[in-house]
Structure formats: C-alpha cells, structure tokens
Length: 320
Image 1 (spheres, helix red, strand yellow):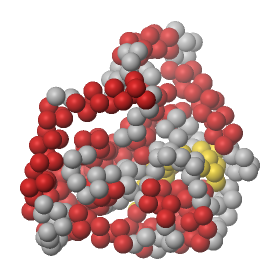
Image 2 (image 1 turned 90 degrees about the vertical axis):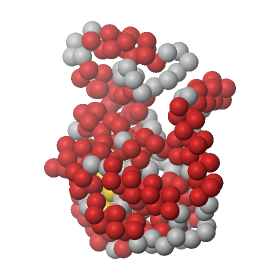
Image 3 (image 1 turned 30 degrees about the vertical axis):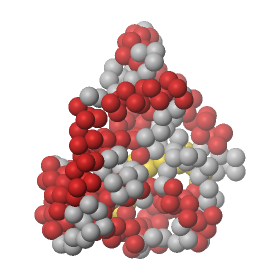
Image 4 (image 1 turned 90 degrees about the horizontal axis):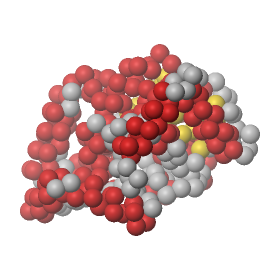
C-alpha cells in the first residue's frame, strides 16, 4: 500500500476529486483522516490548546524525541509505521493506494514529505475568490458571522500550499479545479499517468455512488449526479454588496503576488473579475456590518478559542 496525499484549501473541490479517484479499483479513501495532524503537532509548542496543556506536553515529547538514538528521524519512522498500518487496514479490497484528503494538511506538508517520501502528492488549486465564496455559502450559509472558524484557511492556507508545491513540485502533480470541471477526462488522464495505474474513465459515472463514510468533507458532494460546473459562478452570487466586494478585493490585494502566481492566478485578473460582479439585494450591507462587529468582538477577546476549548471539554470533539 502506498499513500496519496491531496493538498488543497478547503472548498477547492477536493471531495469531488477524492470520490472520482476512489471510484478506481486501485484506490481506497475514507472521509478526512486528519490522523497526521496530532502526530506532528505533538512536538510543536504553538498551535494547540488542550485541557492537559499542549505546551507542556510538547516540551516533554521534544525531550523524549531528543533522547532517541536518531532523534526526530526515529519519531517520524515510528509515525510512518503507525499511520501506514492504519491506511493498510482501510484497504479492505487490496487496493494499492490509500488517498488521504485532509485540507488542513497544508500546515504540515514538509513533515508529511519527510514521513512518507515515497508517497504521491497531488496539489489541487482553485481560484481563491471562489474558495472564499464557497466557504461563505457552505459553512456560513451566505453570512459573514462564521468567518473566524476559517480565517486560517483563507489567510495562511494559500501561502503554505504554494510553498509546499514549490518544495515538492519535482515529485508532485498540480491539478486545477477549473480545468478539472471543464475537462475532467483530460485531468484524470494526467492523474492516472502520475499514479501509474490503468486509466478508468468509468469513474466519471460511478463516482456519484462513492461514500466517504465520515462527517467531514463537502456535504453537498454526496448529492452530485455529475461534475458540477455551476460552482464557477457562485462567487458572483455571494459578493453582491459593495462591502463584500471591497472585502474580497482587499483579501486578494493582501495576498502575496508570488503566492497567487504559484497557485496559477494573476492578481490583476482576479481584481478585474471582482469588479465585474453585479450588485444585488440578495444580502444586506447592514447585516454584513453586524456580522463583522460580532467577528471583531470574538477576535478581540479570544472568544472563539474559549468556545473551542469549552466545547472540547464538554463534548470531547470540536468540528470547525
């Protein structure tokens, strides 16, 4: 068994790509594993809040790792055996690949490449305007008041994804979401060739029957009956008020030119696309400003973090 890692931002079409590929007889996948995130963050001193004190835990784990004969190399080796064993157990049909599609792996791309140097890496890129719009429409139900849960995806994700591609592009494959929905057969041909498996274009018909068996991922993807192209125009339906257009323009302007270029997009063209959006009365500027006021208070007083910790303590699970 050999792992495939799909690196992308959330709402980039990764669930659709996952279901397309798991329809092939040689590929197995399950929802979003997230299994490598806690293993890597175990020795990071920042980025985790826990009841038992993740910071003290990271100090202890780093001391433990430092006393291993080969230090972190031994830890990564053990992590590889542990995770690969779990991937293999998922391959109940003797598939030769297990596909791990976990969007927030963009935080740990270098470590994954160290743990699994022989893995296949697929980078899925999507227009950042459309990623933003899809986050708002799917998880925010069109409102801005839940953006805090996805600030890291929007603000940190693009640069980390771009840097991951720059580091691994000699052994990886880049896939454009826009190209995938426009000509799925052509993109699949490149993927099958990269994975060195027999082409099977019947997946374009059978992917709709694939179940990912998990709570995470695109909830709307389970209802697909074909490759969806309507999503390309979703942004125009979301960024309808003057403030929303200002907000997304600022987001694009603040994104590094090099990052956008690596992802395959040009800042000027993106800004022109936003300017061409026509306004409508679908959303209210007044409600937008109320939502943004709520977001400011949450960020100012770290209420989002407190809510996450309390939710973890009470329910032993937090899903953003």
